[in-house]
Length: 390
Image 1 (spheres, one colour):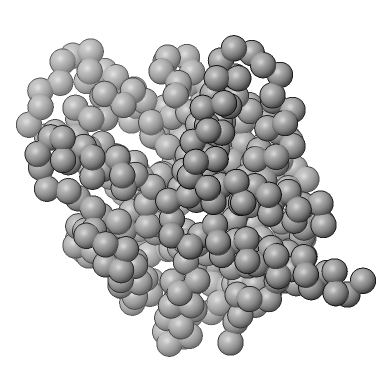
Image 2 (cartoon, helix red, strand yellow):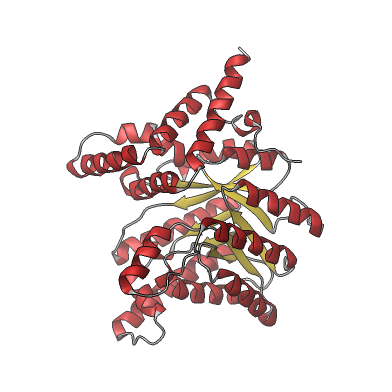
């Protein structure tokens, strides 16, 4: 039986200095007040040009990012690979709005596909549609009754062309690509485009993956509907399964606009639906592929149990576990040690432009009950173990 408490395996990749840095980072992240003050100071310092990039690079950036460029990530990719863990290069630049920036982002995402083709330690590519499109276009297209102007239709067509360009390169290079989920009020647009890409490129295997956020109470019905569609139309459906990252924003918007919240009533219901989705996917693995993106130990154990019951090999290339770089190493490395397919999301990009991602990561760690405490307790356990062996 796999144990997620084996800190020697979990932190074998980390030096004593790495553990010390991680300890203090999670200590800070565990305090909502410290996170709030830190966000204000960091944003202010960057705006007025204070020389804090060096500090950021040696601390939070080093913990959660691979580097500023694909080349910078080479060491991280190699080290992860040495321990049987793959890399998912995630170009985490946010907030761009110009067509030139969108096109440049497309080129960067395609560069990650080429990197994956050349390196067996990179099993997937990934991108967010809002990184290559105006949010407002996706939002208006989400309302099927809304009439788009000619200019808006052109903008939506351009977005679809960009997505197709990425998926086409993924297909040509035999590299699977995740299309991330986003806010519910643009997600129907993303879902429709993603499924069109699957129809086009997933005839032989899952190249294009859609992302299902199980904090939404309608995703089990959606999953069953999509499996029916995939079987009927004879294509493979790639699924990245996550709990989700926009809960507070979703609830607030639903309250402001007076519509029922799309969010699960509580964490238990969300957890139950996540595990229910795992069971449905395992039952239909002949036409599906799964990346289970989760920092939840119980869900990892649930998937392990399902694989055993269904007679699915632990290294079946249709099944991956995934966690974020710098988090839940006790899950990632213990799974890999037991022979399961595991990958880490490795964000990268210029420090200033990746800061929104990093600050959101700090917020999420603060708000997820028990996450930071679990990380700290495991780090402390490993530091104690190392000290006792001296």
